[in-house]
Amino acid sequence: MLLAIALFILAGLAEIGGGYLIWQWLRESKPWSFGLAGSLILVFYGAVPTWQSFPSFGRVYAAYGGVFIVLAVLWGWLVDKKSPDFYDWLGAAICIIGVSIILWAPRA
Image 1 (cartoon, one colour):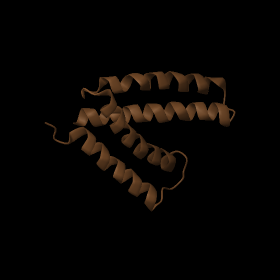
Image 2 (image 1 turned 90 degrees about the horizontal axis):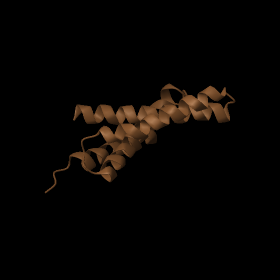
Image 3 (image 1 turned 90 degrees about the vertical axis):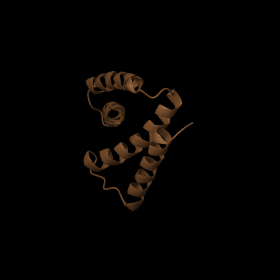
Image 4 (image 1 turned 135 degrees about the vertical axis):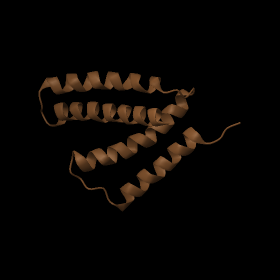
């Protein structure tokens, strides 16, 4: 379970970090190297979920979506300095509950 969580976090940081660098390049007029680095990180992100041991692509990506939401809230707080409010945290908690159900609910 710890490996699955670590891979979800790695994928989330790669997606958010890569997207952030492209945002900086296109929206904040940073050098083209930001865009290139962001693009390479996003390609890496595309491979990370394949390292999960879960057999279903759809299930892995559905669960990853919930983890991504939590990481995006944390990124906004720590990097963009935008404090999440009660509803941001509540929504993130609901997503983690959903991820847990999707991945670890007993199935026949």
